[in-house]
Each structure stands twice: as C-alpha cells, then as structure tokens.
Length: 568
Image 1 (cartoon, rainbow, N blue to C red):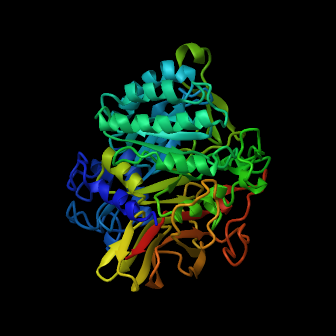
Image 2 (image 1 turned 135 degrees about the vertical axis):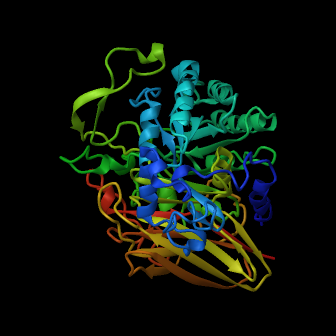
Image 3 (image 1 turned 180 degrees about the horizontal axis):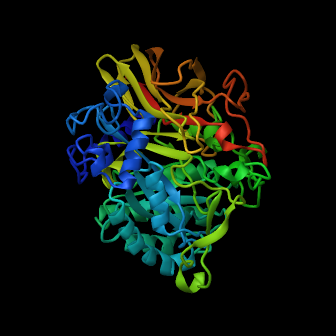
C-alpha cells in the first residue's frame, strides 16, 4: 500500500542525536522564572505577544503561557507553548535581504522585525544566482552570525532560494555549523537552475534537481552538515512544478533522511492584492500568471491564482496535495512572507554600489514617504508557520518540520492548535501515524486556542468555522502526474460561537478498517465558495482571489498538516 514505510520515516526522528535535551533552556520570554523587568525590549515584546495570544500549556488546558504568577516553576507544564509535550515555535522559511538582486533590507532588519512579530525561527533565503553563488553566499554569513548573537531568542538559519532545475523556486537550508557556507555554495554552484542555465522543463534538468537533493543527503551522511531541508516555494504560481516533479523530489530520499519535505501551502506577497489606491492592486501572492512554455499542460487556468490566499495545490480539497497524501507518504505545507519590500515601509535602497560587483545592495536609507506600491509583510506580520519542536534548538525545528508537526495561519486567526487522533491508549498528532487494530474505534480531538488579542492590523480576528477533511490512503499512483484524490472531502464542519478562550472539537472517525488521513482547515467566514471538485467534496471552501481587489486581512484561514490512521 505504500503506507508501511511512511511510518518508519516518522519514527526515525528520535534515532539520531538532536544535539539538545528536553531540559535545554527556554528563551527568556517563554520562561516564567525570568521576571518581566529582566527582559530586553525584544524579549518583552515577545512575552506580551505570548500573553495576549493566551497560548496555552499542556493539552491547551493549563492556563496561560506564562502562568498567572511569577512563582510558577520554570519548567512546569504551563510554560512556553508546550502542548502534547512539544514547544510550538512560529517561523518563516522564505525571507530576502540586500544580498538578493530584488531585495533591500539588511539581515538584521529582517531578524529584528521577525523577532518583534513573534517569530522564533527564520531562514534567510537570498536568490540563487551567479552573483550570489560567487559572492553573496559567503558575504551574508557574518551578517547572519551577528544577527544570531544580537537576537539570541530567535533561531536564524542560513539558506537560499534555489532555482529548482526544470521548475519553480524552493527554500534550501542547513543546520548551522562550520560548513554551512561551503555546502550551500557548492550546492548552488552545481545544482542551481539559474547558475547552470537549467531552467527549462526538460528530463535532464529535472534529473539535475533530484541530483541536487541527493548531494544534500550525501553532505549529511558525510557529516559535513548536521541536517538539510528543501521546501518548494509558491508551487502553482507559474504552473512549472508538475506533479511528477514534486513526487520525484519527495521520493529522492537520502539514506534515512528525506530532504524535500513539502511546499508552501500559502505564498508570500500577501499584500499585493490590496486594491488601489491603498496598494499595488495586483494579485494576492503575485499569482497573476498564465501558462507558459514550461508549464504543465494539465493544470487548469484557475490554478494560477490563490484561493483565500492559499496556493491552489493546497486549497483544493481532493486536489494535488490530497493526491500526494493519498499515497500515504509525507508531504507538508508551510506559509511564509517571501519578504522583499514591505508594504507601507519607509526604507529605500541606499545610493551607489553595484550589485554584481559587491554581491549586495548598499544598506537601506530613509525614503521620506510610506511606500504603498509594495506587496510584502515582515516575517510574522501576516503569515506564520508553527512547528512542534521538542526543544528550542535548530535541530528541534528541523526535526519538527520533517516530522510534519506543522500548522499555518494568516493574520493570527487562532493562537494555538492541538490535534490528536486516538484509539485505545495510543494517540498521534500532526504529521504522525496512529497504528490501530483493524476495526478499532478512532476519535479526532482538536483544541483550538482562539485569538487572544489584536493582530498586526490592529483587530482581533474571529474564527467562524473549522472543517475536518478526510481522505483514504489508496497507495502509490501509477500515473506520476496524478493531481486529484477522489476520496478526499470535507466530512464535518463546526460553527464556532465562542470568541475567546479554547474550543474543543471532537469527531468520531468510527471503526477504521482502511488506512486514512485527516487534516483541518479554519476560516473567519468572510469569503467562501464551492470548491473546485464540487459541493459534495467542499461546499464552502476558500474562494478564488480577485486580482486587484484582495484585502488579505478580510479573508483569513488556517490549515493543519495531516494525521494518518493505519489499521492492521
């Protein structure tokens, strides 16, 4: 069936040395034994964000994050953002700086803003290019290391935005260490589609992409780097990530370690759809393309647009993402800023300098006006990717992403999500697999911590509805370009009538005799429509975004990764 080995991939994440222990110190903002007055301004900002969000402790039942009194023990179940034993760390794996040919900000600008907007981990991903491979990948590293020192409560990875040979872009990043630059530099020099002039959709270029993933796996095997991950960015934007390419990346596993683990469920550039005269009046996500020479011919025209701010591959119930999950293999979603030039910011590129010679633009300067012709937000200002980690460390974040313990939201629609599928005495959470005896009764229980205060647009969002999506695991597909999953559908919708605190939702999956998965989605209820596969599959899904008139704050969604149930 193809799902048996899937479970082993989930099990591996406790076999290798994480380089941390469960008692690793929490960031000061999370640690109730550290008094408010001992925090620096960034840490105070982070703590007030946690308090406002009302992020809850173990099982989302044990009171607010930081406890009501300073007397709370430092590592009590209520601290941090631990649910189900995990510390939920919010981050962004798609961020550009002055080392990108279309960027502007310093590394420290993006890290400072990310920290202010509640990000626990960030990946700096300047564009792969001849200039970046030759100069930028080296020169950005001291800036990243300085930012790590200055913002010790924010994990800052070095990565790059890979021009995937034969396809779109992707984030590639590695665990920090003495070889982080040399491995990324060699990877970019040998496997970047722009550097190698390998962008066209040809079999040779597609093979080069798979070889690049194998190279990263080999660097881990040889202990050059501790870990590496790849996530495909804005996958449906130009129609050039064909289903068979995505499957080839997913299946290009190194010994014991999958490198390509998912794609952006929602792209960045979320402010780009703000209507004139407020904004640039383009498409949300800058998804305003049409099929080109390298596009996969099978994709419909509506796949080139976002749906409720999410990529069509993710937003379509019974669509491409579900077709991957129905194979019983891991493939996860994320949400990111793709931050280049921030909407309503006042900075402009500094004068002078030469990008091709210097590998970077001069530091930004004050431009004398707010710029509403841009389409991006700061990391954490709108899009968040939440990772269930078993400690505050680089390794723990990478392990959590690979394991699929991830949910994503826009506009701080909710502040916490705890998902369990249980049968008998066993349970599994996001990304995991529950093994039960055939015919066992299985229950999905979901705790949603509602928004506990205003988001970065200044209002408190209200969750209107949560949907449970269920699909059968039907095994590997014979046609690698399959992008539908006929069994996936919305099986239950819950109208939410509370505005504060926690909501518990319970759904009985019944007696399970065939492998399946469940995933969750939620909305503010402002915009919806019948999904692309029809009302019987998705009666009230996200609506296609209107080019030139898509205010992202009026159309908020969250999505979770799946949990499998595997009877035997």
